Length: 160
Length: 160
DNA sequence: GCCCTATGCTTTGCCAGTCAAAGCAATGGA
DNA sequence: TCCATTGCTTTGACTGGCAAAGCATAGGGC
Image (tube, chains in turn yellow, blue, green, brown):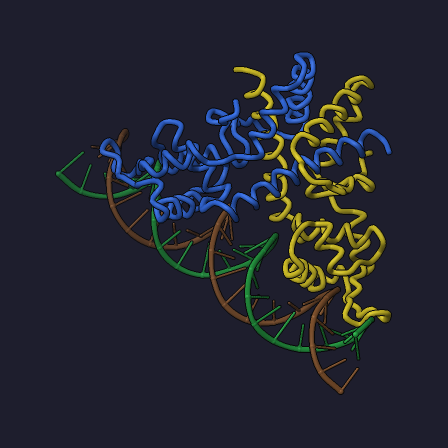
């Protein structure tokens, strides 16, 4: 087994792990991964327009509409017409939404953070540089990825 | 920005890159990523049972049934009752299926392989060990991942 | 040889995410 | 005043995914 195989297998495992965690979360909690991602983007500045979310998530506006529909149904966000430009809709968090973002459990990310924190300094450095290297290898276009995995937010990861 | 953030961002970029590539392939080729993954598993031994595919892909048998339905509709595979155990179904490739697997373009994986090959020996080694480390951090259970990314197969990657 | 349980797959019915295309509403020139 | 543009939603469709129920076969145990 050569290194190319090994690296591809490892990548595949990473991909699969996030996929499986996503599914599990969908089943156990109310908010799904995609919905939560949208929620986080809104939470960053406490509100956002549909277009903004669509651009950040790299999905169509139609998709955002349906995601936001669900968030509204859950009482996590509210729609409100912008006063400046009444075509725009400001989507902003409710108290419940804010709480959800803050408290959302994220087993995958927590797991990562916990184990990462336990690593030696040099190991951490190596890992970061390797991951960034791989990311650069894979993504063609610019990406404004925020520090967010599919299903969680580092900023609020509880067990540090 | 600390290392945890950096590593999570990099991970997110990797995830997103594969996600976007998957979408692009879905749009340009007939087969979707999930369907192609199933096809590859079948191709490995030229045939497979539904259960086998379900286990390898970590999805339910019901899901496999629907994926195979689509592959059958596309004329890529055929279902055939096993002679040994008539409860089992052998799913095997057609000529078209074999051609599809062999020729399927895989920009993401090709890209990775090309860049990986261009790296220094020590860099390759570091990358492999880092990726495996991360994979181990993320996946709880054992995983028998084959050397296959979401959308392609290293065995047939053309540009070496 | 007959039951009964286990096994392998499909069917049914559901939900989420995603898009394209069409539609509606407001903006902002010309 | 009109019209093109912009921002969002609606509609309708497709894929992936699951659980539960159903169907057919296999294989013991008696």
